[in-house]
Image (cartoon, rainbow, N blue to C red; front, side):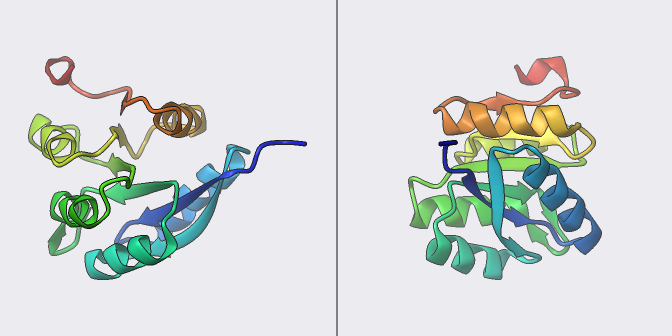
Length: 138
């Protein structure tokens, strides 16, 4: 009997990105997407209601900061696990997400093997810093 797949929630303000991320996550074979949201307010309430194993959260949600959304989620649910997924590699974003308690950070253009490794590492209790991030981050 294969292990139960991890439950994942995706948060990104761009629907095409959500759809691509959903396909990447589902194709890992270790996770399934149970919820998607396009704004921070809905993301916080859905995360608190659904309690996914891991939340993949964009750093820029239109007018909202993913850092602020992650902070709110983690303030209200300390056991939440957040993996920041972003187009931004600048240290200010990475440090911001990790500083509020995110378990990892990866760039959106990283491939399917990296997303599977990130999910597995975080779900095993580790932290993840993806390929392509500036060396001064680590």
